[in-house]
Length: 193
Image (cartoon, rainbow, N blue to C red; front, side, top):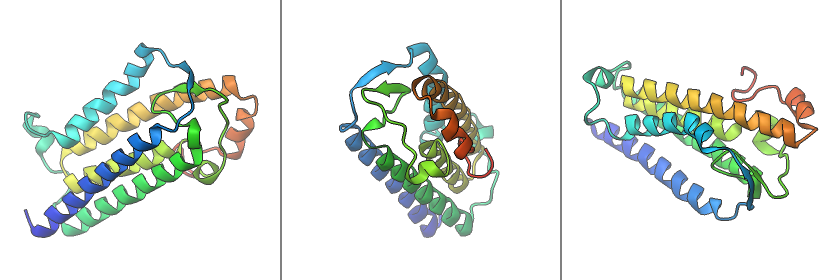
């Protein structure tokens, strides 16, 4: 691999690692949980996410068809991919900061849960997922192999399932949620979805 490719992939790995360390550290300040989604429902979005991680980080043993390229291994695509990872993870962190102590890594209701509408929550109702989807797509583009495309599809599936679960709970918990939905119509992608 070209030295630029090694540097770009190392940058992407460093971005993900930095994000992960921040995410774990920030989780310590979350409010106590009042209600948690049942395990069976968590598996419906958790298993596809786990499979996506395996596809992105552990290519050994995968079927050869998943290791075929869908995009050329160019410096431009590596740079675009790294930029998308940085932008996506940055957007997710911005959303995490805006959520403050209401954040959780699962579909839960926190004690004294508040409906957050500031920062990126003015653009989309689920900006953490928006950022993570962009970061995964950027990683997939930088890898350029079908395993990355499949991982992106799995993450999108998991996010859509999780958004459905979260929105049902938010409508139950907050009478003003329907108004928020009308003021911020995009759930995941600004101006589209």
